[in-house]
Length: 412
Image 1 (cartoon, rainbow, N blue to C red):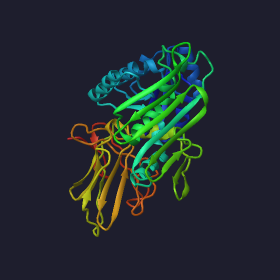
Image 2 (cartoon, helix red, strand yellow):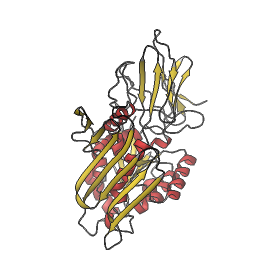
Image 3 (cartoon, rainbow, N blue to C red):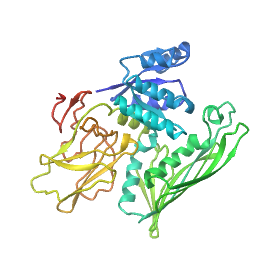
Image 4 (cartoon, rainbow, N blue to C red):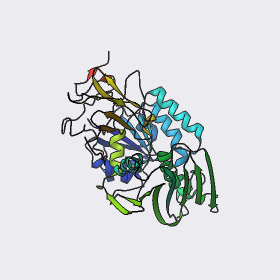
């Protein structure tokens, strides 16, 4: 099933999202909305989109558009995300969502009330190298995590650039420093104490920022800049080594992780992927209800069940179901089910949502292997090859449900 998307604005970032959509058979961007109809029509012709609207409201009124990508300037993110949700659309909002916590709480309350997905567009989290990084840390490759270092900078030299303007909530922290904060929160949880220093331009926008965050047992130091050379780095440092990513925030050309220990450096190379494609595909797992059940083979007895993300694995009618966790899909969860015979069955789910009406929203991107799990490369929408190779999970429309690979039926 293909999910129909609309885009609010003709921003340059759209080009990356459109390219990702063209690579997918799960996503189709069909419409664009702009404050200028002539601009919208020209953009639609240029990008091969079916429909152009001369206002954002018109696009939101299109009944065929199921989900909306909000790529407006930062200061408009909350307003138009909420308006899209209230129009019955699922929303992928370009980062950063907002600098005001109360706005974020309001928007997610609307999403919950409207029973719609709202996701902040940190595309880097959908890259397989992120799952691999999390796995290496969880496996104790660097010992106990102690310190995180992150950086993201480039030079913005056009004074009209919205990233250099206060009225559009610009600044290096909002534009690229947010990646560093997001990365630290992914690895260490929520900070207990934060501190930062900035250098501003004449407009009052921070063009350089350095911050420190203290988590439970972990420190993070990061910097961001709009007047510095191009840099993007993420390093997780433990008491027995470190993991270094030279391109964490994009990672689509040559994603790799350096494992640095006293015994030397090992480089783990991963296959290039388009994080924008994965982000759209994973977000397009919205609105479909499914519980994935795995029946263990006769010679395996499940002895314990654990989870690392607040969700849980459970036995349902003799089958193993991996469900729950990962509030609003902000962090792709890892649900780990321990089985007998020293085997571990791992399920990594991407594109999840909270519990809805007593049932669980579909998990997509479930992958794993029987023994010696050393990588978790997401294969969106396919169940693990050791179960039934190449078989897709059923994709149900809103108001329907499915268990395992059974056909979709209307909810009772």
